[in-house]
Image (cartoon, rainbow, N blue to C red):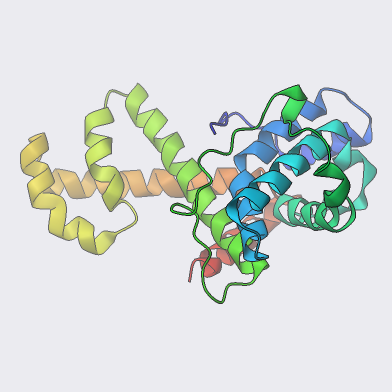
Amino acid sequence: MNASFTTTSWTVIIDAASSQVAESRPAFQALCLRYWEPLYAYARGMGKNHHDAEDVTQAFFAHIVATNLPGRTSQGRGRFRWFLLASFRNFIVGEHRAATTQKRGGLNGEAVSLEQCDDASHPPVDGDSPEAAYDRKWAHTLIRLALDKLAEEQNAAGHAERFAALRPLLLDPVRGEAAQSGIGTRLGMSEGNIRTSLSRLRARFRDIVRHEVSLIVADPAETDDEIAHLLRSLH
């Protein structure tokens, strides 16, 4: 499931929704679609099998787009991660039974494809609470979004081949050191140039992560705390 990297911030969506601005719904939909995997992980953490977790996630997306959810609740002033999970919990408790009797559908009447949600790529972690599963998958999703954005930038700059070779090393310094010689030979770059490229790519990756997180917090001052929380969730 692809999502545009041009995403309206959570605070703008809240303000528009509270004023009943119809244009807020597509932006809200796009933001939610970027983070559907954590919701699926939460449902799996509750003990639901793959198909049941897929069904409740799809039904929830149909529900939140059909309603002006940010404009109808005071939860919206918190971080988007909190808001989305609280809304999902409420949906499961109060509306899932009714929703599952309806025809499976999706956003704006179109089916939401969750084909990437399979047990091989999203296995439950033994001992994980649903909340821990949700936060861990949120962190992984954020990392993937940032790496994909970085790939877009590198492709546009004509460095697609180089980035494809370096991408696996960006978050693995130990492996990066060991692999630099072979990659340098293949790309015709010295080890020094490889190290410089990795350093610049990692710096840009951190900038993209900060920007992505800034979109989903109500107060920019919360950005560092949100990043720190997500990093802890990976351990």
